[in-house]
Image (cartoon, rainbow, N blue to C red; front, side):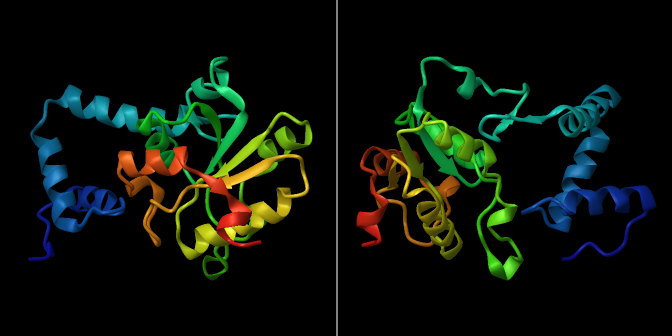
Length: 208
C-alpha cells in the first residue's frame, strides 16, 4: 500500500528526501525515518553531521579521480602498487569491486561515467586528463579497460582504444567471464578476479 497521508509536514519532507535515494521507495523511506525518530538525539545529530561532512569534505584523487580523504588517494600514494598498470573503471564502486578480488595490484583511473548519446553523455564529459597525462609522460605500460559489458561500456572501451592505440601502451580488457550486459560492481569477486587475471588484448576480443 502506497504512503499517501502524513500526520506531519516535516515527516513527509524527510520521507521524500530518503525516497530520492536510489533503490529506496516511499515505504522503505518511511521505515528509515521512523527508525531515526526512535533513536537518541545524539545518534541522529551524528548521522546528520556525517552526511554534511561527506558532502563538504570528500575529495577526488587528483591522480585517478577516485573518492578520497586527501588530494592523492591511498592507492595512488602506495609505492608498492604497480604504477605502470592502470585499470580504467566507470565509478568508485568499481574500484572497490576490483580491490575486493585481491587479484589486482596496479592503480586505477575513474572515468566518472560512460559514453551514452541517449543520455547526452559524450567523450568530453568523461574525466580523462589525468590518464592522458600519465600516458603522454610515458608512465603507463598497460591500460586495462574494465568497464561494464553494456552498450555504453563497449562504446567507451572502443573510444579509449582508438584514442590511445598509437601510444606504446598495451591495451587489454577483461576476459568475458563477466556476463554480457552486466555491470562490474555486481559481478561476484571470483568471476571478476578471474576476468582480471585472464585479461586479453582489446584488439583480439573485438577483432580490430
